[in-house]
Amino acid sequence: MCGIIGYVGKNPAVLVLLEGLERLEYRGYDSAGVALVENGHIFVEKKVGKIRELIRSLWGKPLKATIGIGHTRWATHGEPCEINAHPHTDMSGEIAVVHNGIIENYRELKEKLQAKGIEFKSQTDTEVIAHLISLYYEGDLLEAVMKTVPQLRGSYAFCVMTSREPHRIVGVRYGNPLVVGIGEDENFLASDIPAILPFTRHIIPLSDGEIVDLRIDSVDIYDTEGNRIVKDVISVPWDIISAEKGGFKHFMLKEIFEQPKAVGDTIKGYISRDYLLPFDLKSFRRILILACGTSYHAGLLGSYWMGKYLQIPVEVMYASEFRYADVPISDKDLVIAISQSGETADTRYSALSAKERGATVISLVNVMGSALDRESDYTLYTHAGPEIGVAATKTFTSQLAVLYGLAVSHSPKKDQLMERLSALPHLMEEVLGEAELIKKLALKYANKKNMLYLGRYLSYPIALEGALKLKEISYIHAEGYPAGEMKHGPIALIDESMPVMVIAPKDRVYEKVLSNIEEILTRRGTVIGLGFKEDKTLIGMSKDFIGMPEIFEDLSPFLSIIPLQLFAYYIADHLGLDVDQPRNLAKTVTVE
Ligand code: F6R
Image (cartoon, rainbow, N blue to C red):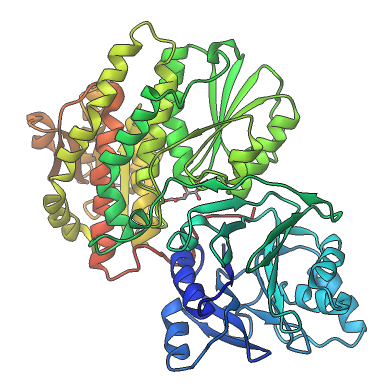
């Protein structure tokens, strides 16, 4: 949901900003812009479309500024056009702002400002920030921001600078992410760590309500009352190579192929005791898992495993549903909030609400220092490295590794079960070895308009996740469904034009799923079977077949998801779509 960046240092700011914006593009890509203090004036350049359009229009312009801010937009208020693109300036053109989030009371503020004779250029909510700061400005940018922040409602992060003080940028975090990067003779602000990884690994993640005054040689952080706050600098373990495509055509493909390592590194966390908890999971009355999207699908799998091994009630809810449902919560509940980014608004606020009502909250995140990481009682990290492709892949299987480990942590057979888990990276490599075959198959189905994904028991969340991958990157309508529920309605959709991907490893429901396949075949549906190699029965029933190595029932989801990720990827790529940045989506959803 929009990416923002700020730089103050000794190097040409435009280069730092553009490099950072390219890394932030996954957060939004409707339009982009930069503002620089050039020869004592604010210079603004913005363009509709991707960062490359902005780069093209900046090409050849001699920009020497060493301070600047930048933005890549995911439109909320005002259509994507040049006027609505950020940065926005005040009437004098001496104050420039980039903003991520929503100012909920902007209409009211706009009316008040217009009554004072202030003219607005855009339809955005952001512009009120620039005008308010201008109104309060009396020679000290920080002071003007301090007076502006209490007027704003909503959730936001913004960076502001003025040509009248061309040595400082002020940043504010309230609900949307903002991190400070510490360099030598240079400092940075960004929505996300990968944006500034080429320049520094020393980070201060800001908390809500914090305001930072960033200069070339100092970083001062305040609360909204103006009290100084001392914060620790963290060193992130990610390197720049992990945030590059490394020869792959897309980040998504690279990240699919990184799964054996991501899962392997996450499993190592058990050996290095990363996942030790200071309490007994079984001491809770219930475990409630809250998450959105792909993380929700991981949570669903976690609930099957935890139910089986911990033998306590486990519920899973979409965080976006939990927030406004009257779910009873008490101190006897353990909430596990799962979020790759750790910034998803629905997940964060649900976790906070559960915490307020007495629940113990564990978060499972991939981004160290993210809001959820800081706001929960305990954090478990997936060790997947930065995930740049908008469609989640390696973080999903890494989340599964942590959830499975938690589930079996009380089993008398836990050593044996963890031993089986550690065999996974090798088996995942084997599945990835079939990528070319899956590509051929994908091209056969690339012109379809609809697809069904069916699975039962542990393959049901995989059916949901496989369908989500296909629809989000290829724009083909796909539905995931529990195979046993077909007969209660969706079977009406089946005819010869409907491909049905059936995930059928030899597990406790295998024979039931074969009966479900019979029901599809009777209605002339086209079955693509995804099961164990050499499964002659399934091969015989399937028009096309994807084989995976035989594996212990619990762990089949780690393998079966890979062909489905690849299937979606190859279709989207074949259709010439923007795999890493699908339309209308953003990697981190910081609005409700
Ligand atoms: C799908 C996808 C999204 C995210 C969802 C939650 O590929 O990436 O559905 O899973 O937006 O994001 P996090 O895990 O960051 O909370």
